[in-house]
Image (cartoon, helix red, strand yellow):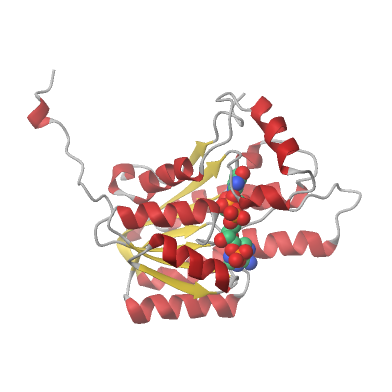
Length: 257
Ligand SMILES: NC(=O)c1ccc[n+]([C@@H]2O[C@H](COP(=O)([O-])OP(=O)(O)OC[C@H]3O[C@@H](n4cnc5c(N)ncnc54)[C@H](OP(=O)(O)O)[C@@H]3O)[C@@H](O)[C@H]2O)c1
């Protein structure tokens, strides 16, 4: 047995001095991730569209936070976010592409507008978020693409949503290879059903969704946003220093059975 004093020591503040940018960092998984990153020593830039939620999130995070009103589907807004990060900190160590929403539509009812809205935010948006922040990225950077267990599942009504999340799987592989000589790691994080405000904006009532999904999850309950933030922290920190191009499924097993 290794004597306790010789065991690997992890720093008390895993992200001490790191700069992170989190799209959609105002509620749910993004907010929990921002709170966790700050608790671990990072400064976070969060952005979203609603000013009231930005103000509330900045208050909850409490310190080491810059909140910017910006739409992750709008390329001019992404330029503004990158300019703000450059002006305030000059560099970025961690990008969490997290902004998202769900709207269900069967293939019979799906409209071009429904499809384009989903793809503009959740498939096109992450590409340009990363492109615009890349010049500021440090040599030991970590990019986290928040996907969903749904990218490997077949759940009716999710043609566009699930496909945007599947696109991220491809980005993680391509960019892991493309950034090989830059020291930047890229991974996807696939949450299972998580108790966040996203569940209030579905075609079925929240209680029906919760009981349906609970029955499908081996762990027997929905995830808490803090549990997904734990997985994000692992991917953001040096504790995942040998992990790139991967898909970390924090899904309670829903996508595994
Ligand atoms: N909760 C789940 O069960 C679950 C499961 C798997 C994957 N996910 C994924 O996890 C991510 C976070 O979801 P959540 O559950 O935490 O939902 P949430 O609580 O509704 O949070 C969504 C966040 O995204 C932001 N956002 C939405 N559209 C945006 C836009 N156009 N530009 C900038 N920000 C935007 C929202 O702020 P504004 O509305 O103010 O812009 C909010 O901060 C999403 O990508 C979602 O697909 C969630």
